[in-house]
Length: 536
Image (cartoon, helix red, strand yellow):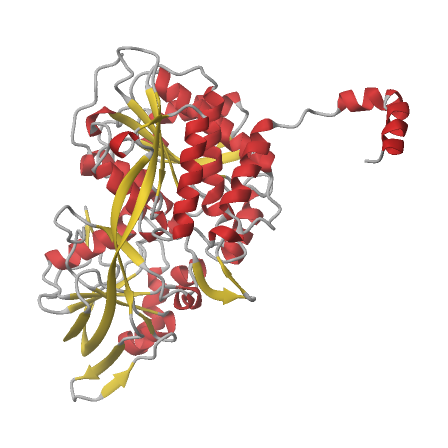
């Protein structure tokens, strides 16, 4: 502004002083979130893939923010960093899959149209030839066993992706997970696993998108002996598209896929009159990365040895083949927004610590299978028994003013009433899961704490007030694509609201009775390792 303009401004300011006073003051939380997202989602960081120099730049930024916020380092050797030894793996080529019938006639499967392959952390080469058995959804649950009457010993299992719609949304997420399905197949004697796409799967995750990214690195963490941590040795051989399904299931394919979409999803398995020959090659390398861990010590001498964990993942998917000329997956909403709002929660405590301690975990390799959170949950820098709850912040859709949220996991423990009260204070409604086919409950970092018996909650911005359109647009157009960048119409005031809501929840959990699982809860029965503590 020139001097003459400054002088003129002095003359007209008194005229508009009333209007100026009527304007709301800038929201410092919104400004903080904007600044953090601007840095983390910049092109310079090249999508923050775990194990890259750009992820390390982001990690150092987060550690610097933790220091500025006055959080106590709770990583390794008095630092903010918990080292996470990783093993990365991916296919070296497109692999080769072919079907053979009883007469020996071979039917090749076409890469990118019929099938897609992944890498194997246990072997650089897989060469397998075995009969195929279709097992429906591969569901083994109380009252339902898709393996009943089928002999899969020594054979390759073919299972529909997902799980039947009659299952409660979070329990459906459990049964649809690859980990659970592989364990069931291995227990029945299978030697390989093939996942078959459904109409629902294709709608949510188009096969073509997966093909574009098939050469991306998958990861797991390394045990002290240097071997990869894997919970099932059964190889996941391939994913088959809806188009490719016809080559496996034959003339009844459309009927089978239609039955899979019904509420009961009562699809009966049968032995296929086919064998599958699979040749796969993988490359494997070691990778190093870090979780960031900062502590806000509690104020109550009796309770400061217990911890409420706030978790958010720092990584995204890095560089992939371009979409519309852009190959950098900036990860603005997934999950620079979650990291920014988590740091803002720490700032909102503002020197007023709660009774319990609050541990801020910004983790690595979530996009590789919740790996950083899994490593921390299995190797925590505080005693596992002292972790009272986890609150996870991942990919809030901040392109509209949300007025409701879905609180995944809240109703499974005493966390639920705390979330209700916190949301009520902010006039935010709680809504049921609007997309149960997504399996959200098992797809973010809080679930790794659940698997260790820790009650947890994960908030997703809801479908009210324009949220449905905003969410569907993001998932179809920007999710895991380069267009998840800062050019989106991001509402940083919505980010501030999201941070405030998570702050209210965290403070209530940290000040109140220690969270405990509801009696008879499904996940408590699966994972809880210790009795609920006495009321305080």
